[in-house]
Length: 349
Image (cartoon, rainbow, N blue to C red; front, side, top):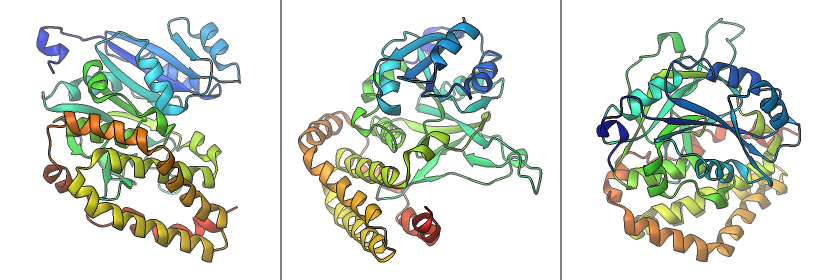
């Protein structure tokens, strides 16, 4: 793939796509900060996922420079991202959530990161927690990209680090969260975009993994940063729905992206972890959470023919072997690492 900047374009065009679902109360902060970006060649799009709060009408009236892409039905974060990218034409695509306030150099620093090396496939911003800690008066990092374990469970890179003391050098991470990242249109299409069957959760990890299989790396540029309201939309899903989506998507991701010999090694261990989680939920008298894990496995059995087709496509186009991928993954389960916090998760109503 030849990047646009290598073809003599000083400032390649950028489509800044803001995903929105009933985010009327949030768009003023996000769009206002995006309209003040220093990068000279970008267009803002609001990709609306069938909102019902009149946010589209509000944006159309108050922000005439923002172009509207509206879906007539709810597609989920993965689906609306694909829908929006297909309806833009700029050289690069920046995908962002509506629950953020962006530093004025956020887009220009994303572009600097993505063009810093021809081996870079995705550059992510650093997401800073929206409000200062009331006890310390410090802004803390939510994530600077993410790390992944062998079983498809992601973990934030450098969470809770004080942002004012955080090193400003570009660093490699395994994946980018969906909150704010840049990718060339050419590579997005080559990788196949987001997996629309995911709806949401792990769709960002899956895309990053497939970009890596095509021979590119993922980086985080701390000079591209924003202030993030922590997952207001995710909280609306509820614990059972979140558990279900997370488990079903992780399993599909593993089946699609691992080589066969690696999958034979990982999959039995993954299923043992799932069984242990189900038993734990039953002991804690949360059969609904236990059933959500079982439902995730059942969904994968039902959709296995489609997963197999996607797997064949991905495996046929990959240029990086699992020996290189596995070097970047944690051999210990991140799920077990944070399971000590499961009591509060399970018992919370």
